[in-house]
Length: 494
Image (cartoon, rainbow, N blue to C red; front, side):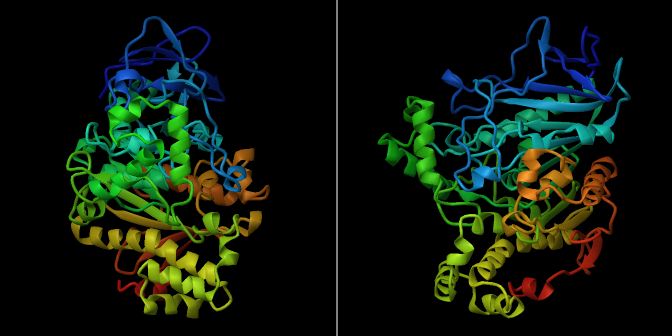
């Protein structure tokens, strides 16, 4: 346990961390401390280097505004209108935020469960400053909520011969280490930490579960719409090489460090924007480097890595629609193109046949999207849950989010569950995906399940067993369903 305690400061809630005293803001029994550095600014000699411990400060540091975000570009249209991605200028992008239950004199009590949020964004977008991720509701319900920034794109996941690999993951581990050392000052229990993330954030969480460098930093984990995945060093390096070719510089950290950040971002965007999590392109990957990630995370978890960590994971019913529908891809894919793409993706004809037969009213592009969604997300998570039945000591829970958004006929698309998990349906940034009439009762239930899991390790339904129980959050009231769409899952040979 940390020896640090709450600090009384004038004109706001105070907390004494190992680096110095913070002053946050207090509203309706929730204290917020924003933009707290957990590592030094990754500039100059620290660019393309592992994170270094944050420097201490004298006096009281104001913590009432979000800190700088990692270098990135906004989403391209039409996704830009659906996925707000605020940018805060500055170099100190390795920062985090804390929301905690608070009385006028300090934390209302100690030993609170802690949740650490790792945002998604294909490893090139996103930040902790997105209003959808506001931690007020978690603090209101007794959880100390932490959200973090980490380096993105080439600066976080480039693969160079002269620099550490998986720098973005190293940032996340540094943030979790900061939490372990300091969270008691905010009323949190460093022995009851749950790390959770969505999309690339969930892929990161899976890698952390498999990383010996993260062992002991958290007790529970949540994977939302992301499965264990990584690539070999040679494979993960291809995106770095493509950016180097566009810049006409060697694919080394030394050469990249001499490139102006804006020029580097422009080249990165040109190389990576042609793809998405569900469509081929030049994405960044977590690399199996023998260090942070010693082996493929899926293999490690199947073999019993983090067997003592309780795990909650799941997907949205129509993940693919965020990527296939707004730009019209779902409408442009006919039967011939569908078959060509399935062949390119090495999808067995028998597997595709099952999906076509069970979805006779859906367009070829929609059937293709369902196949890709299951291949990348639902099937791997089901496989991991099955492996953990034999290799894990801790329970595994599965969910599916199925409430259909009316916006652009997105239905239960990728990222839609975020406003429900954080109970932030009233924000305009959430309503960009949900529309104005999303059911608060469903958000209340889903948010409560995440709080319960962080508090007790039990979200409120039966853990995974041979009957394959999945808690479905919509459409309608939450309900436990055994083996949903089992014929499609079995078509993969499971």
